[in-house]
Length: 70
Image 1: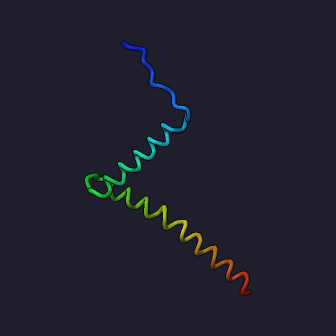
Image 2: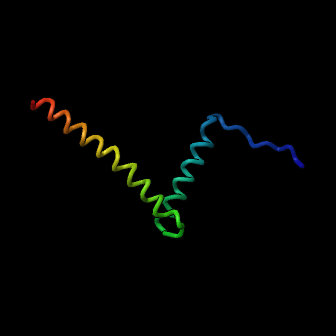
């Protein structure tokens, strides 16, 4: 067995960020190709990640408008 260790980068966050970017690219590829049975879950999670904040903003805006009108 060799005791070789990978060289440490100057930025300790470089590898986790690269890993997260790679995982995101993989998920996008899988979702586009439709190969995975998890594709509907991936797409639904992405849709919810966009819709929930948008709905929350609209509700908050409605409350603010109602507050200032009354």
